[in-house]
Amino acid sequence: MDWEKARNYTIIFLLILNIILFGINVHRSKESTVTAQRADTVSEYCKRNNISVECDLPEKYEPMKRVVQKDFSFDLLGMERLFFTNLTGISRTDVKNTVLLTNGLATLKVDGQHITYEDKNFAKTSDRQEALSVANRYVKAIMQSFGGFTLESINETENGREILFFDRINGYPVFGSYVKFLFRNEGGICIDISYYPVTQGGDEVDPVIASDEALYAAVAKIRQKYPEGCRVDSVTQGYFYQNATSEVIAGYRIGVQGEGFYVNAVTGEAY
Image 1 (cartoon, helix red, strand yellow):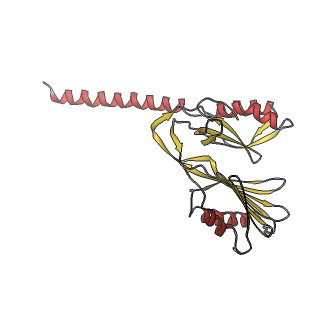
Image 2 (image 1 turned 120 degrees about the vertical axis):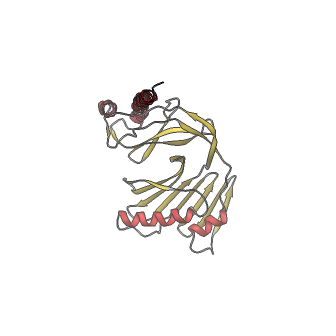
Image 3 (image 1 turned 90 degrees about the horizontal axis):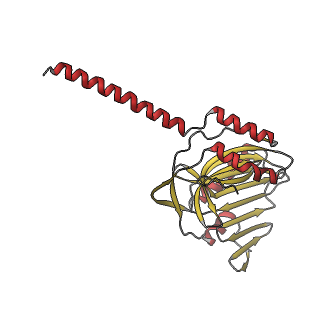
């Protein structure tokens, strides 16, 4: 046997095989990528519906791992220490599962998985950077008790400056777990917290629709809320809590002028 020829044939065979596999991987990558042409097509569709798309769409849409919600309850005393600098003179009102704490012009409401804190006497922030610095200090303190929140967006609204943070799992934001700040134009602060902690649901994954398909699915809901027109500020892939089924599922958040519209990334249903 000519071993030199056999070795050369083997090398050639392996090179051809690598080329074929590379081509397959490139093809699969294109199949799971939103191209510029697709993004332009859905942007044009939105434009015809008086919706301007002022953000980039996520390009990749790989299958997402399933997650499940964990049990959690807020530490009420810990929340008091976090939000009230003066722990004396706090009045408490209990109504069913809701606790309302009041101290002067500051109120703290704990209702199931939600917390709302408002201080009408909070000094007016001078600019965007100061507001973000205040928000970061609160988030850092909150994360000592729960969550791993990261900054999502900063928006200027009619009522004031909104800053939004999301918890994350598998690299994706969990839309049901957030800390949202509103720094009012006239002074005062409102902090809205929602927390649905999640964990891995095993090795199962769900195929998901692309971001352009999710945006297309949300147009009817957006038009219903904003018939005079609006702008889309963000399209984000992640997980959201579905109230109807009490499940945390793969989805997209369509950010519209500070408000979130949601699309089930598996079924394509919009909310």
